[in-house]
Amino acid sequence: MHNIFEELKSLGFDNLDKAEIFSAEAKGKKAEGTPKSQEVSLDAILYDKTYICPICDKVFTSKAIRSGKNRLMSVDTDLKPKYDRVDPNIYECIVCPKCGYAALGKAFTTVSPKQLSWVKEQICSKYKGRDYPGILTYEDAIERYKLALLTAVVKRVKDGEKAYICLKIAWLYREINDVKKEETFLQYALTGFLNAYNNERFPIFELDELTTAYIIADLYRRFKEYDKALQWVGFVILERNVSLKLKTRGLHLKSLIREEKAKVSGGEPGAK
Image (tube, rainbow, N blue to C red; front, side, top):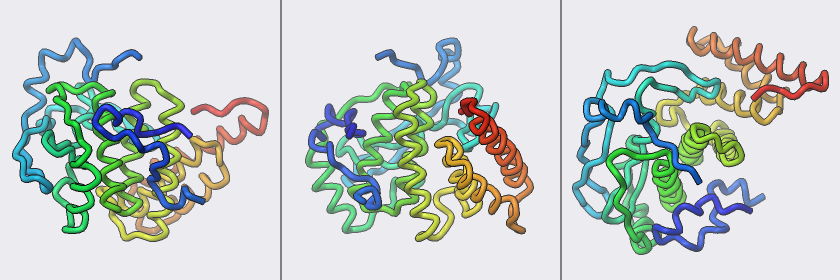
């Protein structure tokens, strides 16, 4: 099996070939995060946000996007957003430069005493450190997210949080057209969201129950499991409390699933 944490070897983590994300699973060319033509305006878009590491108390800054400076252009069927200037997913993961503790901004300060001990023993003791550039590439972001995923595994967080990180990693791979690795992390996301849906309370970060069900439906579609996709999207559409926006997305997704299923039945490849 491919070591999904391969990028972390240079950071000191070299024995992760068999690392597991979800317990249920036991059964070249650099792409810039922002087009070069827009680099001149990055100072107006990004700013240094201050953090205090909950593990080692280090005070440091990490780039963040100024409110109102990034315009949403479109949204993929699995809710991946695309903005006109900077991909916000690149800067959502926070890494302490001193001890290597990493997490999404929404969960960075959430550490219990037991988790603090586990992170110090399994992350901080091995972390070699790295100076990231102010403007991150997609490869930089993937490395940081994988460090956050490893940290989440060490912290023993709920599957929904790990699934959310995996979905974000898949989106980053989509941006650099690495289809194989994108699919790997979409599969991890599907596994985690299914576990979370059946066992956890919502919301998971900003994802409520129906939004999570919608994402599960689209992930099943992407893996060509059309009957399961139709079941999940049907549940979303028929739920009385669904928002008009999500219901509209659900109706579009249902139409897309049926269209792809018909093409496959007719011997034509389904569109991704």
